[in-house]
Length: 416
Image (cartoon, rainbow, N blue to C red; front, side):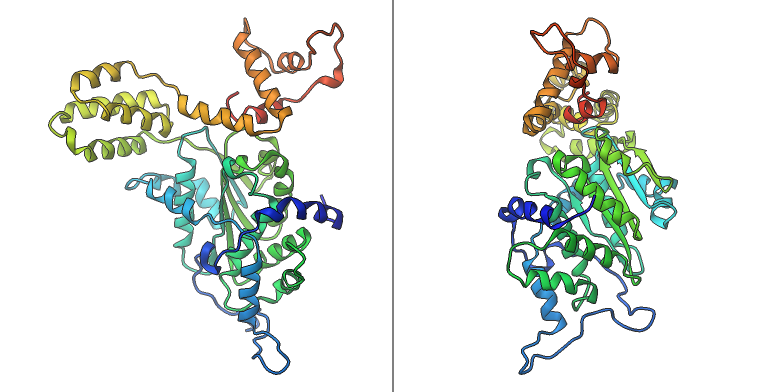
């Protein structure tokens, strides 16, 4: 797709109400070894002293751009996810051959696919922290997408946020951002989308740095925003950027981004050892039950919960919390023997996501689940498409009423 002025005018009205001024360091990016370009130049806008001409220094220009760019603050999301990591949990992933291939540059894009509750967000925080600790000129702008904030997470705000994180690695405005500086100083609302995209690509191509972009929950980007975001990410991948993202296995648009020979898809599941570490910590921290929970029972509880959790942290968390809410071992054993392997709480949140979609997608999801719940035998995908295309009260079927399996999956947010 191309960004033209007509698109920009439409975008302005949509994103104008989501502009929030933030401090320059609100979304800072960790950078090591900031050095000169190959020809010795800094690549910065000229540093001019304010004289009678009133011209601003490169530092002042940079600060002005940072102040006026709309952005989203994901630092809190990153810190919260990092706090949930217990001990060495997830460290095994950083040593896998596929992750190492991506980090070294053999692969350009890495997509971690996983069902709700398997620990994708914590894994993303681990990856970000790991990349930030690398030696050399490395930059790691990141995003934590959230369906509850989907309205404000527009393509323009997402790109502006990545720009602010990258710009925070410079001491003076880089020459590649001069067009952006001119735009924000027009005081006519947010910069044009094409200027944001061009500047982001130019900054990512800076030969002084290796840029990794990490995105959690890419599928939680609002459905209507996904094509634009995918387009921008495609442009970045074509310009020396390394992309790491997680998603539920539900979006054809998103997964198509990782269909190239230089991309990898990886199924994310919590390992038994990670869940065991989590459960042991929960049990150890419950001091009030110290006289009740002997080692034999602890091991029994851990083994049972691991077997029921099916590699999903969320199930394990719900079950251990239920155990720790009881006051004697007899009740604990009774509850332990009846633990289901379901995700009621997560289902509730997913249903909220379904309701938050457009009425068309929401209706498709609801009708899909009604058909599947009342089906007398397993549906084929084709049969389900025809069932959804049937109009109640009509004795004539119209082929134009058929939808696609991809739309069905996306509308159901991972429940189907």
